[in-house]
Structures are given as structure tokens and as C-alpha cells.
Length: 447
Image (cartoon, rainbow, N blue to C red; front, side, top):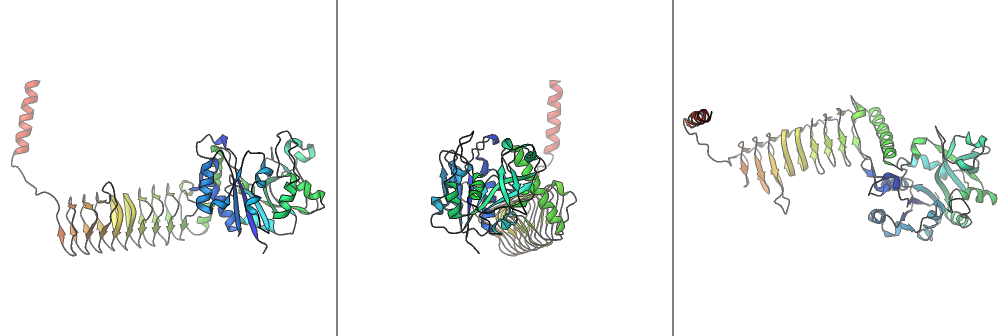
């Protein structure tokens, strides 16, 4: 297979987003749009990936450096059109021999399956098109025989016949590296905007008697995002596809339209997801489980037979074992729960371990933070922690041990022992009756 590289254009200012966050760093399904574009390039087997950024958003360059390294960043300064943006990647691609695919960081729904056919056919330039429901201002693809691309006509320059064409240009292109920059060297900015347009390389290639072709994908796959409303539309499309996918794979969802998935959510067949569940990134439902209503999961693994919620929150590092139960208003962060372990109500479990068949009573908290450092709490197999208990880490409750309700546990509890960490109860005979009588008499005198 011919070597592949990707140039991802991410230098747009994104002013229509009206946000201090750069447009391409806005998240879709819990992941920056730019990362979706990089994911697609990696899925295509691109040996080299270059992201073209602008000087107005240094955060974008830092984001790319953090994922791909400094060599993956090319800067467009000043912005002078898409053709100029691609030329800014020329130095970063020095020495590369092979095909280059040009994509866009604000096109987060584009996947490798839509791009892969572009590398076939042997054309000098291949353009990815789509059939638009409303062609509007899109550039039109004028085709000859078969998939031969004759030219790209911008809507404002199209004649009446061309405006009726609904096959439109997505902007995604594939071209061999040396030819690409040779063609771009001939592009001029002799147009109303004074910019260098990438689309001009089609006409320039045909002047050299080189073949140009078009491949096509669904309009939704190349849906661009330029505003908050368009980001919502893309999110809606993503969620619709994911819901259909999981339903097809055997996941039960009585109200799928209320369930939201992240870009990397994994759910085993046979799982039931009740209404109003939200998955953040990094969740894997490893076996058939029940995720009950109004729960939020992120960075967690749930094993077969477990039950989560309703109204539960799993945070990063939560590992819920087979047949374990995390009930209503329970938050779990950085804690593994063994098989059959239970925390049924109103608990916070942070940084630690709960053994198999252990029971965590209502109102229990793991006191994992002293204001400076985090520490771990370990509850052994079969242990029982009574309601309204505070386990002050670092502390271990041994296997089969019990903690009396209302205890503050600051020392390890040996296996099989009972820990009582509360003040001794004292009953003062008649005190309440005397208090009520005195207060009533006082109120009467004031009345």
C-alpha cells in the first residue's frame, strides 16, 4: 500500500461559535472535534499527520503537540485561504513520499470508511462529494463519464443548470504529495476574496491532462460545524447513529432518545439502559448489566450482572464487579468493588477497594482527602459497614469485620472484629419533658 499522510486544516477563527474556546476544541461526544479528525487520519493508516493551526488560537497548537508532538504542527500566518493553508504543511511533509489526504478539524463525523475509497482508482486528484438535500452555497461537482470529475463550480459562479446539481464538494481531497504541492504552486489569488483556494487544483490538474475523480459519502458524514447550533446538530447525528448501533447489537433501551453516549462507549449485548443515562468518556460495560435511570458514568468498568443506579455516579477509576450494586445517590471514584459487593444508598466511595460481598451502609463515606494528599480505604471481603460511618483513610476494614453505625474509623479493623468509633450514649431521664414544659410556660407568659 502506498504510504499515506494527512493534512488537517484547523486554522479557522471560528468566530460564529462566540466562545473563548477555539472552535476545533469544542467537544462532540466527549471528545474535541480536532481529536475526531486525528482519529480518522490514524484509522486510515496515515504515517504522518500535520495539523495546520492559526496564531490566534495557541491552545490548538498545544493540543496537537500534546497528542502528536511538535513536528505535527504547521502554522498559517496570515490566513490566506485553504490552498495557502495546505501549503503551510509543505515543510512538515518534506521527505514524505506518498498520498496526502486533506481533511478538516471542524468535520468531526467524518470516518475512515468514507475516505478509504478515495485512495483507490489511481486518479491524480480525488475529491470527496455528497448529495446535498439543499445544495445552497455548496460548491457543485460537475462530472463526466462515471466518476470523472470535470470541475468544481462555486455556487456564486454557477449557471442555472449547474445550480440544479445536488452533488457537492466536501472539501476533502487526496493527491500524491509532490503533485499536490506542484499544483498548489500554480494556484493564484485572483478572486474576490484574494485567497488561494484548494479547489483550484482540480482545474490545474486537468490542464495537465491528469485524471480527477469523485467519490461520494452521506451528507451527514461530512457535516461541518461552525456554530453552537451546528455542533448540537452534529451531536444529535452522532447520538442517533450510536443508539441505533447499540440497539442492533442487543442493548435494551426503553427510551433511547434520552440516553447519551461518548465517542468510545462500549456496552455488552444484553445490557439494559434505562432512560436519562449519560456516558462520559472511558466507559466499558463488560458484560450484561443494568444501568438504571438518571445515572452518570465516566471512566468506569461495569462487569456482568452489576446494577448501577438509579441516580448513581461512577467517576474515573470505578470498577464495579460482577453482580455488585451501586444504588441511588452513591458516588464511586477510584474504587473497585468485588463480586456481589453493595453500596445501596447515599454513599461516597473514593480511592480504595471494597471486597466481594461486602456491604456499605447508607450515609457512609470514604474520607480520602486531608486537604493535601489522597489516601486509600480498603474494605475486605464480606465486611459490613454500618450506616452513617466515616472511614478515614488510610484505613483497612478486614474481611468479615463489622463497623457499627455512626462510627468514625481512624484505625485498621482486624478481620472478624467489630469497630465502634462513636461517643457512648447517655439518656437523661425526664429532661425532654421538663424542657418542653419550661418552654411552654415561657411562651405563655410572653403571649
